Length: 289
Ligand code: SAM
Figure 1 (cartoon, rainbow, N blue to C red):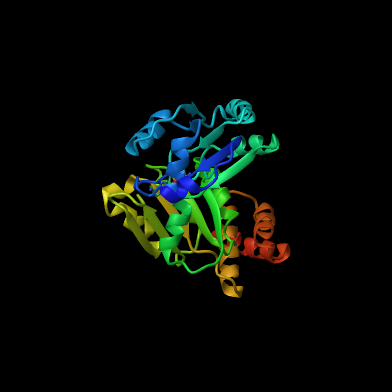
Figure 2: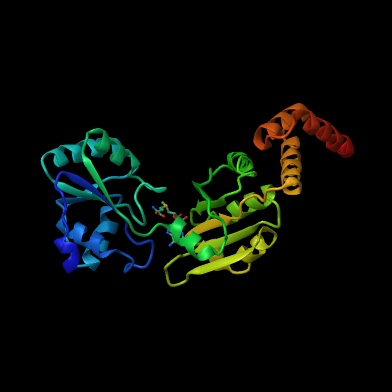
């Protein structure tokens, strides 16, 4: 703590402080120093953050800042910062603004010309990626998929040709829906990584082909609960893989749309030629009739 105390902490500044995603000791020395010295801590849930502060023997005034009041709270925070205060912003877990409230407050504070200082720490996405063993320099953070099945499928179809590792967050109790949707859209050979309850007592990190994913989740009732990051290997580049993806998209869309619409949409998603897709769609339809 000594070194953290010697650093400078400008006034009239909003500090964006990452907090643990499970293991309470995953908090930085700098974060603790800042949480102990700010004039107030803006947080999603005052009870949660109060518990975290208490664990470290800290006590600070709190401001409730959740997704339904971000704009109004931002105005109040700006008034206090203009008066020279230091304010910390935290979310319930991990990094504020990452599938969590915070971005609107940061936007407003920056627009008011005030200083914003990030204090980095845990984020479930990066934690999962670091232990996944998926070798890819690029990742595409999606966060939560839509809850409704049709919208979820549409969102996934748009990701079919992305070559970066895909990173999903899933709400507790929805993992089965998520996996079923992935299985319905992506090639069964793609590798999937389930990062469950990271940094907690029952942490599990499991990697398998998508074809085995449903069986893994169903093999233990506990796996249908808990917090998950799901990583999916990106699309392989090359003629065969891309052609197979186009064929998959065409088949999925043909179940819902006309031959023309399915061919047009597949062309938009994959960048492949509309005419060839139209011919192929006619063949598929012909074989089905
Ligand atoms: N701001 C957080 C971050 O930086 O990762 C994310 C908050 S978001 C509301 C919560 C989601 O993050 C969970 O539904 C889950 O997908 C993921 N998550 C958070 N903690 C996790 C953990 N310990 N293990 C696995 N996933 C976690």
